[in-house]
Amino acid sequence: MKRLILVGGGHAHLGVLRALAMRRLRAAEVLLVTPEPQLIYSGMVPGWMAGHYRLDQCGIDLQPLARAAGARLILAPVAGLDAERRCIVLPDGTYLEYDLLSLDVGSETDVSWLHAAQRRLLPVRPLGSFVAAWPQVLEQAVSRAGFRLAVVGGGAAGVELAFAARQGFVRGGIDAQVDLVASGPDLLAGHAPAVVARAERWLVARGIAVHRSRAAGTASGLLLANGEHLAADRIVAATGARAPCWLALSKLALDPDGYVAVDDAHRSRSHAHVFAAGDVCAREDAAVARSGVHAVHAGPVLAYNLRAALEGGAMRAYVPRACSLYLISTGPKHAIASWGSWSTEGAWVWHWKDWIDRRFIRRHRMPHDVTEPYHPLQESPYEHESH
Ligand SMILES: Cc1cc2nc3c(=O)[nH]c(=O)nc-3n(C[C@H](O)[C@H](O)[C@H](O)COP(=O)(O)OP(=O)(O)OC[C@H]3O[C@@H](n4cnc5c(N)ncnc54)[C@H](O)[C@@H]3O)c2cc1C
Image 1 (cartoon, rainbow, N blue to C red):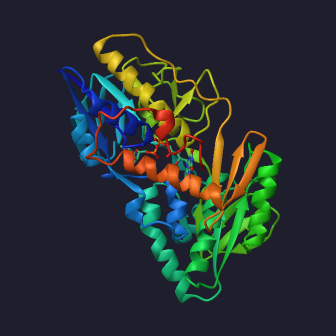
Image 2 (image 1 turned 30 degrees about the vertical axis):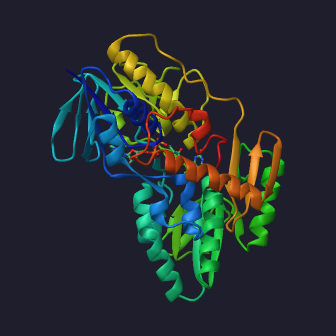
């Protein structure tokens, strides 16, 4: 009996669990080791903050999915990994050996510049901690007139979170200011100028002040690189990804930023018995953005390759699409669509995103007919790389 350990109940492992639920592995024990019983689907978190969803609508319960896949669920974070000895270690000191390991633990929020803000700081990852803390931010905002929230991060997540926070305040009748702080000159780097112009127009319309400057945390808010001090009662950090630090001691080959170096089959470059997908990995052959779309789309390929590694067979490559369509919500039921140089916006774009997101959640909620044909490109919430 061989042992496959899936570490992290992330977006890529949803695809693996679903594939295993449809066809279990022969003669292999499967463990899923992850700290939370639910995967909170990040694409719907801004909609939850804006008041469009209840939190229970934004999560996928891993327990029934694991059961259907024949996997034993262990609710604990992995604290360490020794790829030479083929074992992982849990915080209580338990060692678990594996024949095959798959990592889908996502990334962490890089808050190195913001530490001094201490209790004002609210990193967006881990997402579970963020959603647990957000209602307290709202309570704080209700009780303090002129409450100021700063969102640090000019990428799609930061922009969407700023819109969502603003909408949450408006909806609650809360007198609060939202500041968006982007470290570079450009918002939404990687998107076409027309998309950036649309977002900027809506940021102005929603009364969100944009600061284009690197920011460091202080005891009372943020110090911007231009010398300005931005007072902030709370600071949401959507400052980009950082690799989990325990990987540094794993003996796995890592890229210069500390992510697991993988080939096009998502197999470790150094250890053939380790696979990784989603934010935690770095492809050496292609620049693949850290986004849910790639985690979701890599899932079925990862599932195929894990089976091939255990039962024999050739590996498949995950080929990322050249161009992605992102759907960026702007607070109320309105969103911007971005696909290469093309863009559009409107209430219908939000409804399109809503439909895709809800369908993804529905498809991964057990019990349901797992024998239903699985077309990952049709059921991914990020099938249009919605953001
Ligand atoms: C607010 C927000 C909105 C976003 N919206 C979009 C979007 O619309 N489209 C898009 O493409 N991308 C979006 N993203 C980015 C997207 O969330 C990530 O790229 C995606 O979640 C990565 O998936 P993953 O499977 O790598 O990891 P995750 O989905 O983050 O899952 C990681 C899993 O590993 C578990 N874990 C963590 N540490 C450990 C450990 N030590 N041991 C065991 N398990 C562990 C976690 O609990 C979790 O279950 C958004 C991000 C944010 C923050």
